Image 1 (spheres, rainbow, N blue to C red):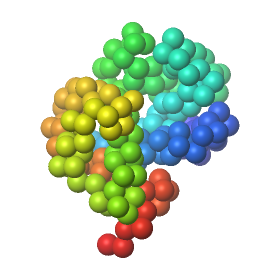
Image 2: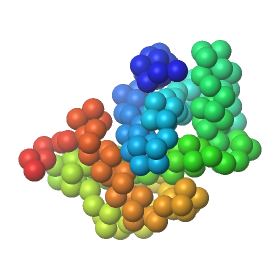
Image 3: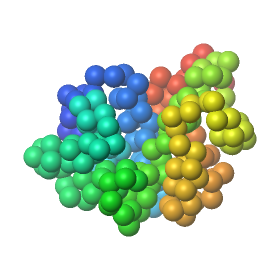
Image 4: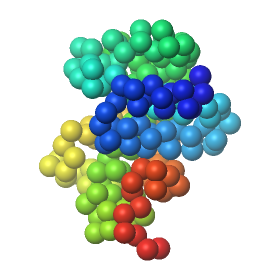
Length: 189
């Protein structure tokens, strides 16, 4: 499956602009790691774009992403991608084994956290987000309370990336896609 095919599926099932941008944010981080590891960037991008494609039709932990998996199978999405998507949900019972699976879990919550933090910066820009500000906000339980800090920490550890380095890598990746993600804000630098 090509990125364009995955994007078409994402847009078919996801109406929320925020959820679409979340998928694009995770994609930016995943593409960074695919290049860094010499992995198949197209597969990593497709995985990221589709990881939450069914959230609007299956918005419960009992259903997402398990009920979305057959839809992806029917659409010709590879078993490798479908398994990675299943494994990103702690409650799915699918253990993360491959670098693709571990990267998806590591990038998912962090991408959302970086987006949320960008929105509260004076310029509403990812270019004002620094590792130190991320770590400080992670301690603030009231900030982005729906994002699981343990998943961010555990995801980096499971992926084998020091937390500070992982945060910086994802910031850099999202900066490269800032316009597409709507995260350039009014930053002038």
